[in-house]
Image (cartoon, rainbow, N blue to C red; front, top):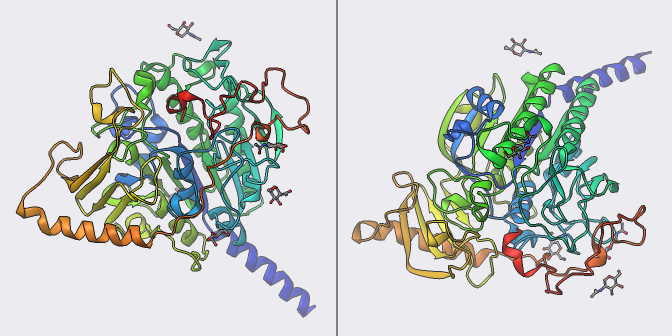
Length: 514
Ligand SMILES: *[C@@H]1O[C@H](CO)[C@@H](O)[C@H](O)[C@H]1NC(C)=O
Ligand SMILES: *[C@@H]1O[C@H](CO)[C@@H](O)[C@H](O)[C@H]1NC(C)=O
Ligand SMILES: *[C@@H]1O[C@H](CO)[C@@H](O)[C@H](O)[C@H]1NC(C)=O
Ligand SMILES: *[C@@H]1O[C@H](CO)[C@@H](O)[C@H](O)[C@H]1NC(C)=O
Ligand SMILES: *[C@@H]1O[C@H](CO)[C@@H](O)[C@H](O)[C@H]1NC(C)=O
């Protein structure tokens, strides 16, 4: 009797204790610029749900992704470590890549799972598939996965708009059609872009409802395919904005985010759910008006200028996070540490972690635990190391290189053809007074700050242990679903028979396709 009572008490205690752990929702956009949201100043975007999130939450003005391109940025987000450590360099995974995020990396999902969380990812993973699915998210701490595991331009894009309108941008016609995975199984191929967002939203809200009902804390990681090119949208969002194709894609994502907030409220967990929104890298300027917009920042995706890596970021937790705006420094690697602590988990101590806890900024209106940031380029290598370093309001560029833009973009510094340039002494800017990096500083007055930045950067570079590159091989037989086990075999799949044979499996127009 007493034992049964104790057991009952324990069950009660454990369930109450679990119920108190905050749910965590991490929303992640693709190729979204600092100037793309209404609340960040875009005059013709329609992003009412994100704007509302910002009104009720905390908006960051100085928040950085870890890379100006996709895979490395995502690796850093979920491991709290710069991509150089985990081997997610140089550049990004393709459909035929055989590598992936190493299994000895600890993801935030693995940590939260240990803390009793249900974990799911819905959307674009882009940290490898592997010939036998070994790198998919369900082998990295996620209980559930639904999504296209890489960029949706890494497949022949056929129809992007309801009912049957073509995509605007070129895609990789020699790759396998976009596979939609559920866990490790392909459930649709080619994926249908006109219904994809609804599929994602339903998977996400279903996961929220199921766990809220079961009183199990949940972690939902929601990396949207939006607003990466080729932009796509369902019937309700086609021509819905006055910003064209990009605006339609953004509106559809925003509406999905609205549905996720609605699910959180309907499930009665809005007072115990932490929601964070940011993006992987800056806008794809090659797409011109169909790409995103970095606002007042310089250049975009593929560069270590501010436009490549400074991102919109909004934190929301009613009653815990005071609405407002912060100029404190934050970074995606910090999201890892912050979420881990919120969930009561342990930040790994057996390896270097680059993130810091953002709790003082989020919950105490205090100062950031970081006053510096290191910028790795799109394709880093150990001999150059970081391209730029920020310390307080100052940013020093040791190297600069063009990104992915080209003419008629007005600023040649952002062009793909602009070669790597070493700056000695480094180019120095005061980012707080000159966010657009227009007016380099020089002279005696800055000698001391420059010396400090040079020293800290040399130390950081010399201490970095580079993980073996995982972005090495590709084999067209590794593409889903070119494997013999794939059934039914998609009729439009060429399985790389038209592949160009470049060592990375990338076509010569690679720069158009990142
Ligand atoms: C993971 O394994 C690789 C290869 O053995 C090793 O180089 C790396 O240091 C390991 N990473 C961690 C975090 O243990
Ligand atoms: C998948 O393939 C890798 C590389 O060949 C191998 O190390 C791993 O054990 C395989 N995993 C499974 C689950 O078969
Ligand atoms: C959207 O606008 C384009 C360009 O004006 C037009 O061709 C298309 O028919 C419109 N689509 C819908 C669904 O309204
Ligand atoms: C959440 O908190 C607000 C403000 O305190 C309150 O009005 C609302 O009823 C709470 N919601 C739930 C589901 O407890
Ligand atoms: C590609 O994969 C296939 C099937 O696993 C294998 O037979 C072939 O040797 C691989 N090719 C290369 C170049 O590694």
